[in-house]
Amino acid sequence: MARTALFHLLRSQSKQLISRNIHSGYRFRFATLSGTQYAKPNLNYATSIFSVQKRWASQAKTTEDDDKISIGPRKSKEDDEDEKDAGVVYYGPISSTIKKVKMLSLSTCCLSVSLGPVITFMTSPDMNVIVKGAVASSVIFFSATTTAALHWFVSPYIHKIRWQPGSDSFEVEMMSWLATYIPRTIKFADIRPAETNRPFVTFKANGNFYFVDAEHCHNKALLARLTPQKATHESALKNL
Image 1 (spheres, helix red, strand yellow):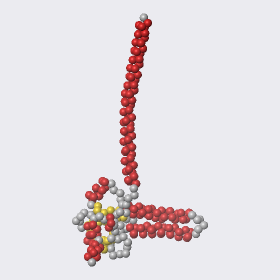
Image 2 (cartoon, one colour):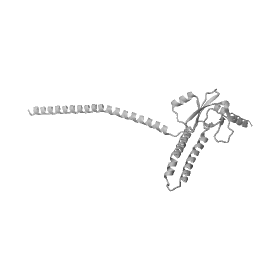
Image 3 (tube, helix red, strand yellow):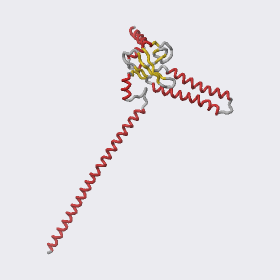
Image 4 (cartoon, helix red, strand yellow):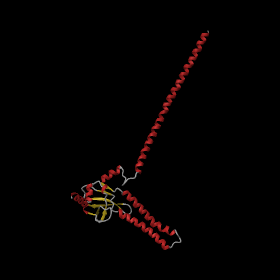
């Protein structure tokens, strides 16, 4: 009887152990499966963060390239294709710089003309009116003189040249008083050598002076036609 009772006791204990192991294994499996299911959204979330960071990096690189200082007008790929189709063969290397300086000079001139007399007459009430008028006139004259001198100095500068090879004329873009571009059409037959002491002048046409930066004019055929006598003189010196 004792043996039978002991046997039943061992059998019941073994069943309880087996049932516990089965339940624990099931829980472990369920936790693993649930962890796998929840891991997928985390992976998708990480992928989305990586794509956003990559997009931000590309935008930051584009902004950094745009902020870089460059000589000459900045052009995109589409602008380059349009300009090539339009026959542009020359760009002034400091065209954008000249425009900014001209706009700054015009702004200071306008401020001097409009606000200079007001500020002069409002300050120093004990000063004579004639002296105040002389000071205001001097400020206006100095500002207008520097603006006029700047325009005279950079007026021959060619900002852009359009030319089709084989054509007898070409189109240039000059800058006006108000820093706006003015197109002009020049014939090669009207080009004359610039016999003047004025600085930065390459040739003369129709009574106006023009300047082309020879180092940045990559079309040598056009450059030779713009300075025919200069090229002939240099070749003659080489032959000597």
